[in-house]
Image 1 (cartoon, helix red, strand yellow):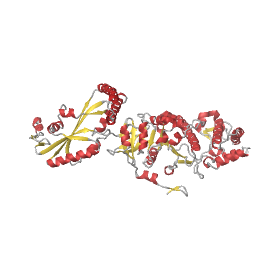
Image 2 (cartoon, one colour):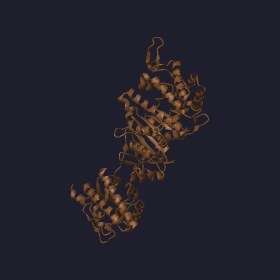
Image 3 (tube, helix red, strand yellow):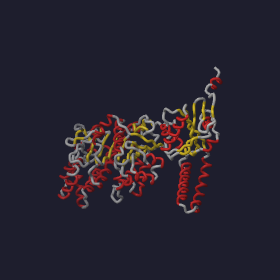
Image 4 (tube, one colour):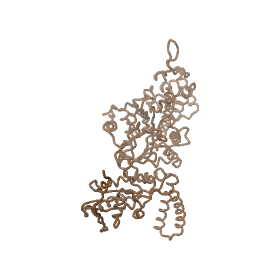
Amino acid sequence: MNISNNISNIYPSSIDNTNFRYIKIDNIYSSSILITNFPRFISFLQIIDSIPKKYLYDMSIYIKKQDSMKILKELTYYISSSSSEIKTINKNQIDIDILGQVKEDAKKLRKEIQINEQEIFFVNILITFFNSDKKMLFNIIKEFQSIIYSKGLTSNIANFRHLDSYILNLPLNRNKEKILELNERTFTTNSLSNIFPFYTRTIFDKEGVIFGFTQDENKICNIDIFDNKYINSNMCVFGSSGSGKSYFIKLLVIRLFLNGKKQYIIDPEGEYINIAKKLNGNYLEISSKTPMWYFNPFEILEYEIDMYKEQVINYKIEEIKEILVYICNIKNINEIEELKKAIKEVYRKFNILNVENVYKMSSKKRIYVDKKIINSDLFPIFNDLLDCISFKRLKIKIKENIIDKYPTFTKSTNINLNNNLIIFDTSNLNIKIEKFFVNKIIKSIVYNLKYNNKKIGSSLVNKNSSIIYIDEIWKYIKNSNTTEKNINLGEKIFELFKTIRKNNASIVAITQDISDFFLLDNGNYSKSIINNSSFKIYFKLNFSDSEFLQKYYILEENELYKVNRLDKGQNLICFKNIALTLNVKANAYEKEIIEEKINEDNNSIE
């Protein structure tokens, strides 16, 4: 085979370069454009999608790496000199503003090089169109320039240089043309990755669940938040009312449940009952007058025995006393002493005097039966406690403030604390009581996690991952009060974000009131919570909220740009220097679970 003859077959037989507006290659007209300016943030796939598929074109991207240290020195010198220039410039506000903005841009570029370790590149983008009709060719170019201009890009037609542009689009690796030097634009590594047209980012962790579908390519984004490649499994989810945030969380709960994860949800608005019923989860309604599930504070649990051992009875006495003193607002010393005495007495009546009495025993041999705890109905309840109290006024307080208000805690436990889905409905509670219960719930969950992980052993711990969701977390951050003993919930939640991974668990903070989320301690708790979350998910935000996040350096400028352009049902997920816009979609099974209504008369699903 004669290779040289075959190559010659692809060469044009003639090129007419006599017109400055185009060149004629055999019987085809060709004209080129150069991208001369870019918006701050854009996915180049948007440009490719802007070119109608019927058009014939070639595109070349020329990339030249620069000496970052040299540019860093030049930037430092420029920032220093521009500061002096601003002081000496004529008092023209427009000139001052322009020079100030350029100085800020230089500072940001310096930060990208120094702190974020970004490399610097010179980039040229050249697009050459072809058509057999030269009038149609001009129309194509004019239309394309209008389309990309609407997306923030400007371009120039390469008049007088169409032959140079055509040659640059051929696979000859010629990159020293003057036309390139005149149109070079500076890009950082991250910016360059965004414009590269044939680069597709696939996020697919083998053991993960679907978080959404990428906006540009409709590819599945499948994430395993417990994968060791992530610093931690924590998540923050922000979004204004009606943005699709709650729908996404419900989808995530369903998918993680089907993936075998244990999940606990603190639900301050009572909106997860459908999911609990359809997935056979436990739904503990704290303020309900007719609850389906009960939890008895007098019951002694496995993790409590493991933690307090021989002192577990004393621990329970103090724990119940604290609950009653707080909720019933008991301040009289004599009443508190009577309360403690009555709690001891009620345990004695039920023959629970020490840790051995908590375990089942064989009636014949008087030996423990595999260290199984006695049945729930063998523990005292609050009504039993009333029989042991001699102070009438104290009895009335407990009846009115506990038994009448919170029936959920007045019967033997029927909730399964090892269920894979447990939802705590804290709706219709005043914030003081709600904080108290949330504090107790979180404490119990964490202790139970520690015990279960210890019990199953390290070899199986990764298969027993757990997630704690705190919806409307702003309520507990905003209203934290350091003067209330044990109820500084903001600090406790913050500590949980730092330590939860040790228990092979994740914590998810969800909120729509971002300004309130940052109220406590000048936003330090909130910033720490976000910084200790590997995954940040943003839905459509009010403009003031998105600006608020940028003010606290939570959102980078490119991320803010994307968040402000989200539609309902879209989110921006940020993790590991990745920022992806995702479309949230549910299948028919998931929609059935989320969208069904509950019949309020009989509490059943319609």
